[in-house]
Image 1 (cartoon, helix red, strand yellow):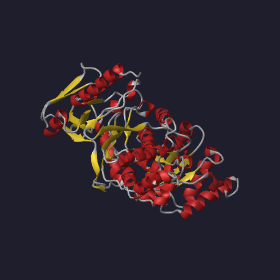
Image 2 (cartoon, one colour):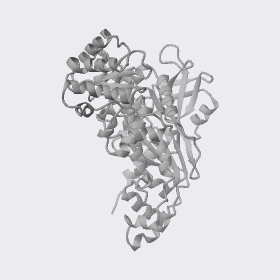
Image 3 (tube, rainbow, N blue to C red):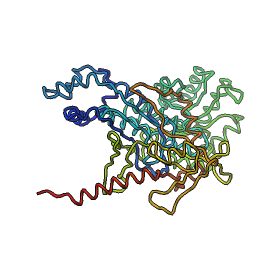
Image 4 (cartoon, one colour):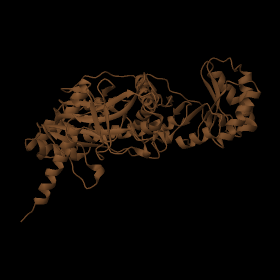
Length: 502
């Protein structure tokens, strides 16, 4: 067995349900499942999509294991026929999903699966495993990067929850704005360079002496000439010897402001605001004005914001566990729910209002309009509202034709917005990725995903993308979707009220 066959990173109950579907004749019924989240972490307005590429790859690995593999978790004669079925069961359905780098709001379908019931059901756990991890990391990375206009590097592999998480977390962080990742496998898999400086062990390997620090710096420069050179200066004392030894080593090895590879120093402890200001003054006094200051040390968006407020002389930040583990909110809340069986919309009802789902086969449109009064304008347009429709309903068709539409708040009928024909543009957020079991969407490079996210972010107003108390962007559903949901709920409530047993 391929040990990293993520199609089988699943829960057993997906397969025990599958056996029942098969033996009760429901295996060929076409099911529609939506993957979405209900609330963004840390009071975010939104989340960053990452992981849909790995979902597409995972889906296509379904049914690639021999029959004896399934016997390991479905043993016994009772499962014999089901094991044969699974060993030849390929995915034959359709998958629609948002692009990586898309900005998604609560309840919007990030992935929609339309497939025979068993095929769609068994995808739940691996799909959630992939997307909950990567979207947690990407959303946190976007927060950290929005705290500063300086470059942020991700280097949290040593704190990540395993190698798989380190590799794909590094990718997710870069999509959401990080300039680079230290993880070499992330770089190799995505054809982008990985970045790094040096550890304290490199300095102490020369003996715990001031002169040993100097020699370590000289050797590092000599063996990395032509590259970007960053020296770690806080091993013993940042101001009394670290920065001075760095200056000595740079001078003795011909590194100055004319050096084409770029050079700098790194601070990894202490009062970063104060130390960076002092180090900047010392470097400038010695003519090293282009020497960059790179800062690390358990940073997150709040600490970076405070450093910026204090006027820290920091040119670039390195952030580890805050991003790699999404430390403040490590568990992302995507769920995978059945919304239609055949042509019949279905829903899960709950006494907890937030858990009430939208039924039916859906599509989300993002409405853009001219707005000269606010926002980061790209080609004069800013994002104004999202509306999720039943595919083919009245609003969906009207948007496709560019007709006048009115978007109403689901919970407050007095809140609505009308977009006149010819005054808005719209694009769908979900695109078909798999048709009849085969991939039909293009692959995008990591750089293209980064650019796509950045472009999305700049179409929102600054108020909607700020970290603290963001202004809430308009996210609604079509009248037909609302009416379908209310009809299902009303019918179900009537049945529940009339239900009795002898």
